[in-house]
Length: 186
Image 1 (tube, one colour):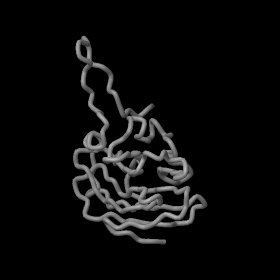
Image 2 (cartoon, rainbow, N blue to C red):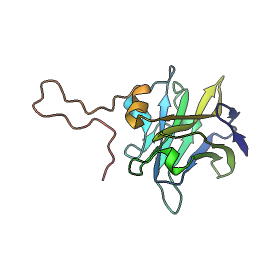
Image 3 (cartoon, helix red, strand yellow):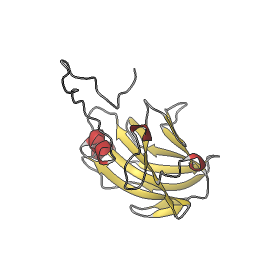
């Protein structure tokens, strides 16, 4: 298994991979499918608990003692998607990664064989982080240790990737429109 440090990368030989993030807190794991320029093509390119399926990407909830998993079939990822960026966010009552500990991202192949691991460090006020990304380079897939966090949370991260997650009212409406997204289903 390859141990990555922030900013380093490794080739991926497998076409089907599973990403997990170990953290000592309740946390979600999701993915952003990004085109050139680091932006989503549509809001459907945010794969998360309330929209768990995207082209080539599936977000699988905790079950049987395992945490969230994001499964990526690299052969099914659309050609105009250059990056599958993984995102983990705390779902633990306003705590930060500095309070709960540093996450460890793991990538395994379709049979469960560990391929890559990245232990994040130096997190403090962040409530959401991008531990790793899987990206296309000259026709081959690689994994990179990103290790970037957002103190501003999910809305800030989504905005930076081309998604408007605000709860703004519709112009001319007498009552505010319901929040556009993302919303956890009951």
